[in-house]
Length: 280
Image 1: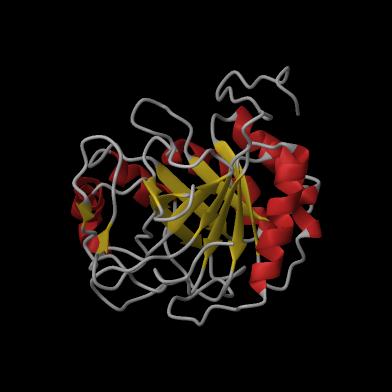
Image 2: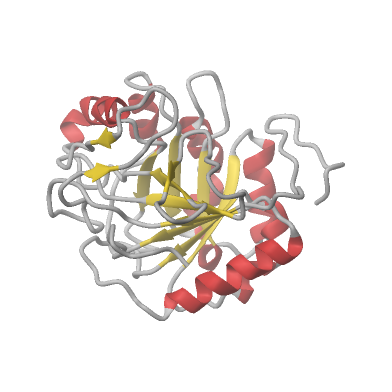
């Protein structure tokens, strides 16, 4: 997985000297709904023309954020917010799980206006997790309302993931066909390498998630094939759950493996993380 490897639909060097790791965390907004809803707004110094006060419509979202590490002090990502006293950037990736699904187009438009970095769609099939949400048609329908990048987390069985994978990759792409983040669970894939490589071949950004009980070892052999690793710090399926503190050691272990291998892979964390919790 060196620089000689190319992906025609999504060329991205897989190693670099200035390694980066991203750590996702939930943040605060204006309502208490699923997924640790953002409580009360967020104020940050945002790169480019953004306002220094980002207000995310709480009626639409569940909170997520990414912290990028491994850079020189004071640098930032293309859309990230620098954490005070660190070299980490924060990317806000709200989930639409608690949105008014009859008004989803307006919801994603509001999120774009608020300046979020990506919009996350939680796909659940009632099998892999005990909840049922939406399919690729809903995600595709939202694309015409905004240009913000999408992220789809497939909390579905292996059959549903493999049979509908092309539809989800296509629905998650940007307005001009840019790769969207498609996350599959390690627990739902018997042939994980095959699924991840298919996502990239289809023009997506392959990423992998692991549940709280799953050890970090389960994803180490695919770090060369992914753009993101999502560490669930609650059991997936429902919001409002308490953060599982023992996940911190797993996050550190995955981060160490990424840095050691020199991989260009982001770490995301999802579940019960509040704005006052410092990333590992």
